[in-house]
Image (cartoon, rainbow, N blue to C red; front, side, top):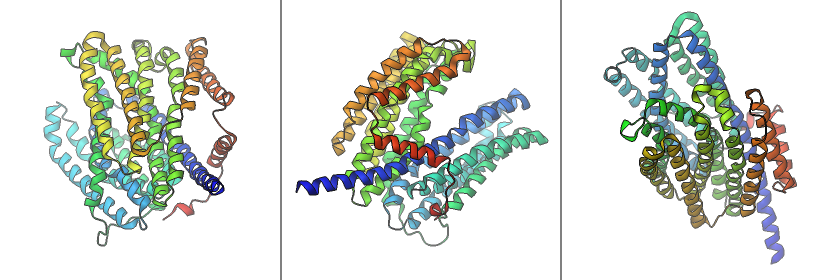
Length: 505
């Protein structure tokens, strides 16, 4: 009997290691691809601010903000539920057809509605140029929604590298089109057409990997997904509002806020939200992997992978300590002397963002095991609690009070998430990893604080700090030989040419 248990344990670990390898490979690929976004965004912003006058650039930013909010709201409805249902289906095509139709339908309705409301919105904001800009960029909404439908279907099928390739293509083509069209004299409208062209290109790349059909009779009723769509939409919207509530409240005169305060806080928040890139890359892939294991009757292998996911989130804490130690120099170099007050805010907010990673991974696990309603009881109370905390902290302590409130609520949310995951699946994060992460955090903070704080030293300081974190974890035995081999293999596969035919469906 004991021999059988040992054999099963080894088999589950082998399955978990194999899927863990695919998950790590996919996560690294997507992270690298999504890492192009801040780089290309910075280049395009530097270019456009030199080619467009302030009024046109302001119109562009406002227009993009409105359209992106609409796009994000639509795609959030179906993304996580689609990944889970596709991964667990014997035939993904009926689900893919239904999701593509629904996202396109919502996208077309939103585009038509935005075109109809462009004039009143422009009048409300006293921005006449916004009429034409919104009418043009509204075309991007259904295209973006169609691309997102392909993306989540591909991730559900395990096509992680295809997802990375499409994202990389989007950001590179977006930058090239914007520069070319603006250089040819199309100005603001050229930049907007560049954004639309990037969505078209992304959709075309996804069609090379997966081809859901629009024609034919729907074979999968939407109502079967509602049990996941509704609670996950509430969770995602709550988290989106959580990210912006503090800045908004810092603009309210009744709380002693101002645009200057909000600007300083927003600068710190831009850097502090970088861990969201990891969550965006990792969570969908983790959901796909866990759903695959559970649908194939391998709950123990799924449990091992989920536990490692929580462990990864815990191991991010030393990075927060490193950023805290270098926060003042980081803000000074990135934003200039006028934003020096954002340094302490960054030190506090980055820890809160790492806590949000725990919330995101925990919500992914709850979704995979069929408990999406628990996600609502995490996200919505977090947002409402943040509002109450900001109402107390901002009038008394200003911007640093807002940062402390945000991070405190995020940490409480992470604790509640871990309790929910443990109650729903008897799954706890490894205590040893938490202790080692805390020890490494203290070490790297001490080392980074002793380094020179001149601006030219910023990048070397981060490299030194990252090396300290890696060597400390190795020295403490955090990574076993199999994990070290797994990481080396995944990094090697990223730079080796490989056939993509196996991902085309």
